[in-house]
Image 1 (cartoon, chains in turn blue, orange):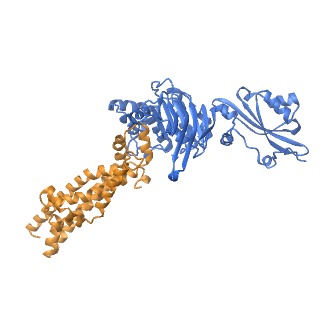
Image 2 (tube, one colour):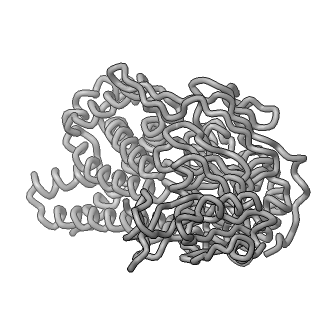
Length: 361
Length: 224
């Protein structure tokens, strides 16, 4: 989908950076709950950066610091040149007008029409009425809601409500958009279309988008960068493709299960052992094809060059950030595992031994 | 009924309407801001004035726990100071207002507390001031609930207004007691009761209509 009525480019790009941010909530009896411990994270300008974590990992607290809904106990939160963590009162309200936010449960006013909901941030900013009318019309066009202008939220579907939320968040031409689990209450198809809209907005308006989610599929569809948060700490961060291709932390791997890993057929999984058994056996190896090599016929070459027979057990090739990404689970003669893996890695593939399966009589 | 009695009935009805209308308006003028303050001033809330919240909460509770007939008598000196007399229709407005204001305040507070805190958060994220959040988010969203609450308050005031007849207030209650009961005229009593029923019905249906008109929530989300 293309953005129907492009707005003027809002910004040259605004980055967000968290520097050593901690958040501690004192509890009764002198105990304290630590939500974030010294988080340092740079969100590049014009990127779509996803923060992924389990519930209670601290991702929501971190996101809400970017517009001062939460204040850091220590550390700095910078949006562009503004120190959000230190801003107070009128200064903070001014910053918030340049940071849009969308929510899991939309948070639309039930007694305002679509048009009036989108106009609310402009009313708050004291924009003249005629200008509000012009701007809301433009925004409704942008998110494809023009025919629903005079409806109330109760008459809309979840996806339409989130589009209203997005239009409202863009009303004051912000340079940053924060998304708090914006698609978690939507069905998969609606999720895809809302994410596609966010992606268009990012591209056409040059908006920096910081989102939190607990679904790797969301990150895969739109995020250029990703950070994994666990127990209040960023355990892994970087370019989405790199993180997907070479996940280092166990939490990252567990989020990627079913996204970039393919499942072994059950009858093989049942017989898989971590140690190589005595007697003839097959090594089960995960081969990851990334970047330029993703489409090379490497397994055929392995057979040709080393004479190793390869059993394909499961596999998939998909796209992440418009780059091909392949994953195969293969069985190799256990004796040839080491030189086969060395061969594949020499040619730019990644391999990981999963275990061994005794050859059946 | 004789024409004189009919005239008495009409006069008493107008007196009741005057007392109820005046005390409803004055009670709302005091109760609405008080209710908004009570709903938004606990620790960590929009206006965050926990001490003032507690004190006002105590005052509201104290006023509401005094039986109305006692309140009327207890504040006679205050009424006399304000109106110059403690007898008559205008004097009755003072205790009626004092009874109505804390009641309305609690009803308004409840309606506002029912609003999803996510809306307040969204408004804060837009850079709204507390005053803007109250004016543009809380009051409009709570309007249907407030309309129903005021309906309830007005209906209660119609009942209370009959009681002030006992201490020299006038109106329908006074007429019912003096003619219907003390002079043993059942037809007057019946007429008074019918007029009161009609008044309550009218207030109730107008109130409900206003509430429904401003309520755009999905039917399943109403009356939480």
